Structure formats: C-alpha cells, structure tokens
Length: 225
Image 1: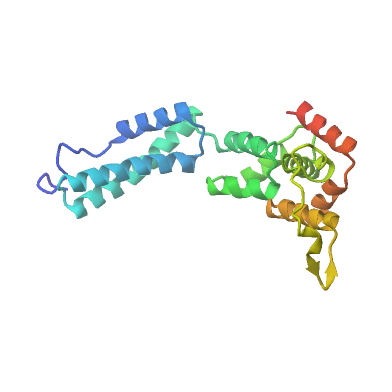
Image 2 (image 1 turned 120 degrees about the vertical axis):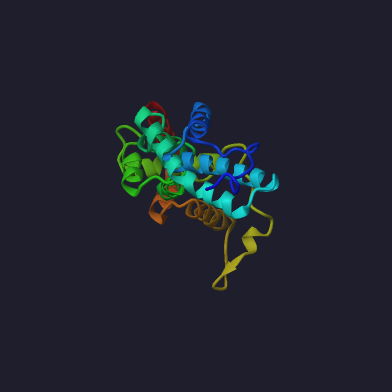
C-alpha cells in the first residue's frame, strides 16, 4: 500500500504491539477463550476502521489494512496461549462449575461454552470434571435441584417465597378434564425445568424427591465445591 493511499497518519492502525497490549489489558480483568480474545482484538481493529474512515481515509485502503491485521490477531492469541494467559480447557472447567452451581443444565452449559468457541471435546471434559466425585447424572440432578430451590419447586415448595397458584389455575382444562391446583403447579414446575434444559426423568425425580433427601444432595454439592 503506497503512502499516498494509506490511512491518515493521525489515525494509525493498531500494530502487533498495540494489539498485544490490548490483549494483556483485557486478560488482566477477564477470563476468556481464544475466540473471545480474538473477538476483543477484532473489535479494537473495527474501532480503528471507523476512526480512519471518519478522518477521511479511503474505504478500500482501510479494509485492506484491517484484513492484513487478522493474521496478527491470531498470532497475538497464540502468544497468549503460550504464556498460559488463555486456556480454553481451564476456562471451560471454571465456567461449567459456576453454571452448574447456579442451576444450569448440562445442555445449557454446553450451549454457553459452544457460543464462546470451546471445542466439543473440551466441553465434554469440563462437564465430566465439574463436581469431584459426581457422575454426569448426579451433576445434572444436583443442578436441577439448585434451580428447584431457586424457584421453590418440588421439595422446596414449602419455602416462604413460594408463589401461590393463580386464582383461575384450578379451572384450567386439558382434554376436557379440569386440573387441580396441585396438577397445575406440577405442570408449571415441569415446564420451568424443561425450558432450562433438564430431561423429563430428571425433572420428575426432582419434583418427587423428599425434602430431606434434597437437602442431603445440596449439602453434598456444597461439600464438593
């Protein structure tokens, strides 16, 4: 690119040094994946593009410069991985642990990690190791219980903040048969768990669980945290 067509000198494009500094600054504050870091740096380049165009640079030249910087972004990400500042596996394990303990299903955790560029095998490994001593099925059950406790469902329905059924709930019908308030509440609870990604078998077990057993699961989850 000739100097006569380069973007104005008062709006210089970010070089490798600038992008590396931006990466380090971001990683000092946030944990992220390789894809997440690359997106941060690409947004940095996009801001430069807007500034250069506003300053009067030719659009074609700006786009060419931005395109040439994409391999630089990849190289900076490689640097961060070599330094250990970016580790998709460690990110996935930490994030999966946090999400499970907040009541997210395995399906929801998978979707969350996939959206952040974590590879399928890394996502699977993270879920396998999310709670020490728990099988994947036990992890799913525990996570569903966490959500049930938050929403006061099943064994946690007697807690003070349980929202009472709507006045018209007992009048709802399906197939011509009126539903009792208990049936309406059970269907509502099943719907909440299903929308969160939990399978019917897990949801049913949670809703039918004795409060004492549910509390034991919660204590076990806390002990393994």
